[in-house]
Length: 241
Figure (spheres, rainbow, N blue to C red):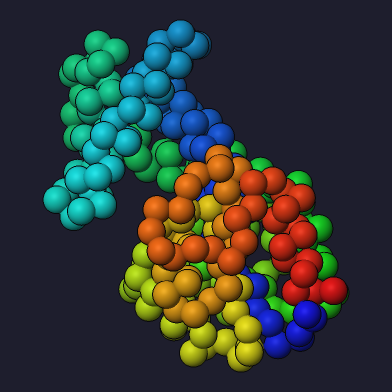
C-alpha cells in the first residue's frame, strides 16, 4: 500500500530512543554534581535513584490531574527522595540547580534505537514524509533530536510547548493534519494513553511500540500492537512497499 502522500510521525522519548536509560544517567549526573561532593558513591547513588523513581511515579498522578504544577512535581519528587537517603538539608536553589543540570545535559545521554536510522532512510528514499510530534520543553526536546542526528526537516517537528497544545489532546494531531499536505497519517508511539488514544481519536493510523506488552485499557484499539522492533518495522513497511 505504498503512497507518496503518506506522512509518518513519531513520538520522541521511549520511541526513538530508550528514555528510561538516558533519564537514569542524566539523573545520576545531576545528583552526583550537587549532592555527592564529587565522590564516587555508587551505593548511595543507586539507593537514591531507586527512591527517586518511586517518587516520580508517586507524584505523577497529582501532576497529571493538575493538582500540582510541573515545578512542584519536580521539587516534591527530588526532595522526598533525598530525605529517603538521609539528605534533609536541601534548599530551593539546590533543587532548581539539579533540574537545570538534568535538563541541560540529558541530551548527552540519549542513544537512538538501532533500527530507527535505517527506517528514516527508507522513508526518505521512498519520498515519504516523516517527522516528530512530542510533548515537552522545546529546548530540551530539540537538543535530544539534534544529538540523535536525525535527518528531520525543521518544519516537520512539532513540540507541545511551541504550539501550546499537548498530548493526550487529539487537537495536536488535528493541527498537524491541517499543516501537512498528505492523504494518510500514521503515528508511532510508546504510550497507549498519550499517543495511541488521541491519534485514533484524530483519525490517524496508530502504531503502538509496545515492548512491555501492555494491555489496551479502553475501546481505542491501535491498528498495530508491536512487541518487538521486527514487528514495528514490518508494520511500517506495509505502507511503504
